[in-house]
Image (cartoon, rainbow over all chains, first blue to last red):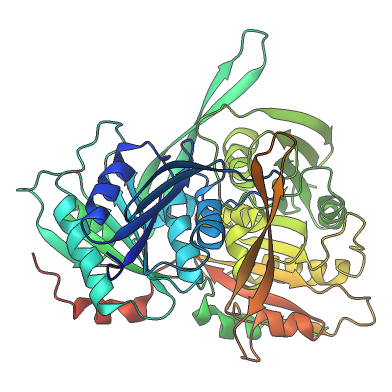
Amino acid sequence: MENKPLIFISNDDGVNAPGIRALIGLMREIGRVVVVAPDKPQSGTAHAITIHTPLRLSLIQKADGYEEYSCNGTPADCVKLGFKVVLRGKPDLLVSGINHGSNASVSIIYSGTMAAVFEGDMSGVPSIGFSLSDLSADADFKPSGKYVRIITEAVLKHGLPEGVCLNVNIPKATEEELQGIKICRQAAGCWQEDFDERVDPVGNNYYWLKGIFIKSDIGLDTDEEALANNFVSIVPVKFDFTAHAAIGELQKWNLDV
Amino acid sequence: MENKPLIFISNDDGVNAPGIRALIGLMREIGRVVVVAPDKPQSGTAHAITIHTPLRLSLIQKADGYEEYSCNGTPADCVKLGFKVVLRGKPDLLVSGINHGSNASVSIIYSGTMAAVFEGDMSGVPSIGFSLSDLSADADFKPSGKYVRIITEAVLKHGLPEGVCLNVNIPKATEEELQGIKICRQAAGCWQEDFDERVDPVGNNYYWLKGIFIKSDIGLDTDEEALANNFVSIVPVKFDFTAHAAIGELQKWNLDV
């Protein structure tokens, strides 16, 4: 058991979500597993961290090669606290998910699932986020299993380039419909918001956020294109926001004071 | 007044923070101004959006060429709601801040200030985030004024390359000490966390997140390097997480199913 890789698991849908239960089952076949996940759903929390309230950890289960905790914080908090307080070190691999809903294209920036992955990546741990394009609570995670296993084992075998982590999205499809895996780039697009405006019983307005995703990218090498054709998409992701190509253009502005 | 640019302002320290009050004062000299900012501090909320509770807007002030609202949501919510419900359209420019504390290097990913900027950017609006490297409530925003004005006017004049927004950081320094402006790339680095472990009155453990920033970048062209030398840093930022250079490497894995 000691020779098996140590795999750290988190998510943003909360420790009891079917997606993380499926991921735990798959990872326990591959290695020793430590889970630290939010005690409640945290979708849309992005990379939020908790700095104004204290964090708490609750041990849920401990067995040979398996430990599971819930935490009152965000996915990023779970990873920070998990590495520092639970593991007191680093795992061989971090996996996050399986998220209920796609984190392809620009959705990555709102994603707590991917925040956990970035935290692992920033700590130098090979890290993978898995998401299934199905928001429903009773989503079927079974067809995802084969792909989660293949990708996890490839990362354990090859490692990842320095500073690179993976955003894996799986289309909602049956095992027969799934076509394979494509390495992609993030599609350009945006969420076009709308607000459902309502009036509460005392006469005050309130708003519910809703939106639809608009793809503005016609490339054939994007994650959205892969998903639309029933391929599992892998986007290698790095954590440098610099628009390097724009540096020269801005330097021409001559902002000398 | 109608010919003046329409400038939208938000932040993450809340509508009453000294930093946004300073920014509002500066922008009212340049254009018409609409403010939609969180009703409470939202530091560390990153790109969180509110999907499980309704959002509310409160009008605080309305005058010729000026409107100010508070919102119970995150900075990203403020921008979405501000554009859709308050403006019912798009402004000529979005500015966010002035943040109390640096958003240079990897701090950008935790930043609510920059989340507002990304929202503007994704909507096609030229957008700038301003941050001062001083966390204190009584930080002196006066030396920042000249630089905020120069950069804002340059963006209004030149526009920004498509999909690019700006992360501007200002060192804590006097007007005399400030050396000018540098166009930079995001420094590589990470936050090294530690947790202050305590025991509550009923005997349960709890943890406070704390950490120090570790720069792992010796380049002279980074934002951290500029700030350390009392320069204002401008990082042109884009919203593509793809590690393009890693795509070829991953394709060699032959993940054919």
